[in-house]
Length: 64
Image (cartoon, rainbow, N blue to C red; front, side, top):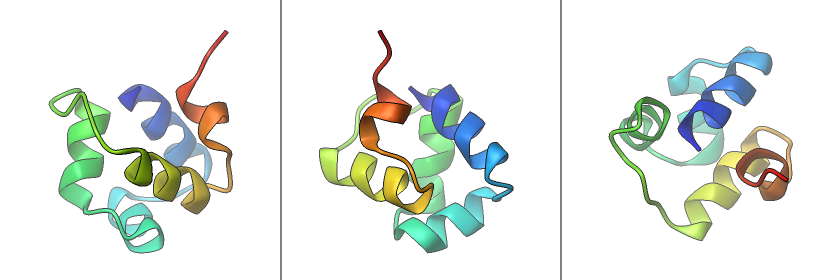
């Protein structure tokens, strides 16, 4: 999951801090998710990250 957040964040040209500000999710959580140190999070956090990246949750977090 985390590598997809990082991939989409980098595509958007955002730093972790910029994504944190846009999503209202702490940079520590974003960093943890991207590095794999954090493996679970709330649906609300996923929604906030997706919205800040102008994506749907499913576009980022679900694969076929």
